[in-house]
Length: 432
Ligand code: FES
Ligand SMILES: [Fe+2]
Image 1 (cartoon, rainbow, N blue to C red):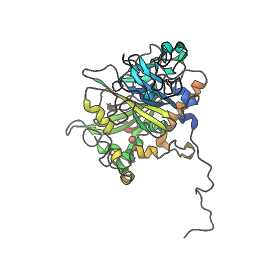
Image 2 (image 1 turned 30 degrees about the vertical axis):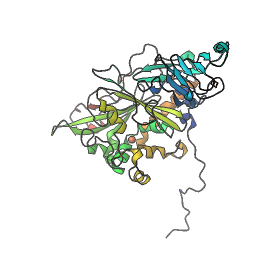
Image 3 (image 1 turned 45 degrees about the vertical axis):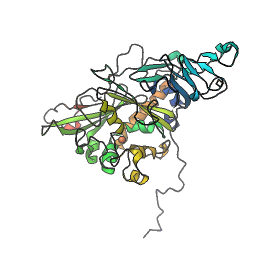
Image 4 (image 1 turned 60 degrees about the vertical axis):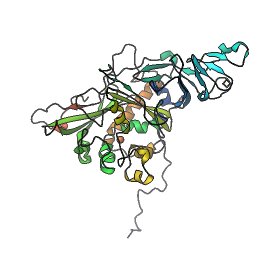
């Protein structure tokens, strides 16, 4: 029976309204994170999927943009609203030297110069005065990158040793085999930071992707992780978190056998989050030890409550990209094939992250030791914001001539620990 003499504690009554951390999550022009993200090149399209056919509508950092490739093969990014009277260039026509608006036929090149005003005498005597707002682009790693920041401090594109040099027979795979996502990436309807933080939250794999919903990674128990990899009772003691040159990584230790019936080997799996929004994720389906990492994922904010996942994989294996795109199953199915009740019984990343809200309510969180990676990442992002506000160059922005960056994600065979040491506590090969 309820004791009526002692008031209940911890009830929901009278709680203050909840709130999100606007500095970390909001990305529009003029916001702290929006300005910081605008110091970095952001991928906006797959180079291979972007043809000179129709233009594509892309929302990026709260701005409505159009990405297209003109008939000469040059990629361009311009504002969606036509500089004349505002019709959408989504309905424009791609031509040899630019994009032409459907309404009165004004044509703009990839830098927004107005080349023609179809309905004006002589193509518009004052057309030089019209300019469609545009952003600079560069192509690398099979992607089109755009720079939306202050033109006077436009940095070079950073380079990563995950993606270069290409090995024999290798090419870049960058296009999602999902309707609507082939060119501009896979859009999801919640704040970008919820997904980015997930990459330094390894213990969720020991619960969500294995215990709670059954084994969801397709390689489990075969070519990928052994099932004991996911043991949630030992996950905390097997995991460490480290600062890297460009962000944060976790290292997750486990044991496997080398080949059929071979001797046990100790392995370290690590994922790195590089500032401001890049995840280096090794192949989680065919987890092959001691090979160079081959993939980066950008978590590109579309606006405060949407993001897109854009990736580049360097591989000679056509199956590599497919296994990444469709390698996590829920009850043996892809997410969109599940009924609402199946999603309840077999939730995956989307259910866990989207249900945090369009933007999670940071004021309601209760962080624990296994959130260490999340805490480290947020701290680094806050430092990035402080740097931008103080006029300093934030971490992650490339400088001219800098060397190719070393990406620390991977699966490595752990060297033998000296006799008598505690293996779980021994320093990692690559840990900082
Ligand atoms: S609105 Fe685009 S040409 Fe008139
Ligand atoms: Fe996950």
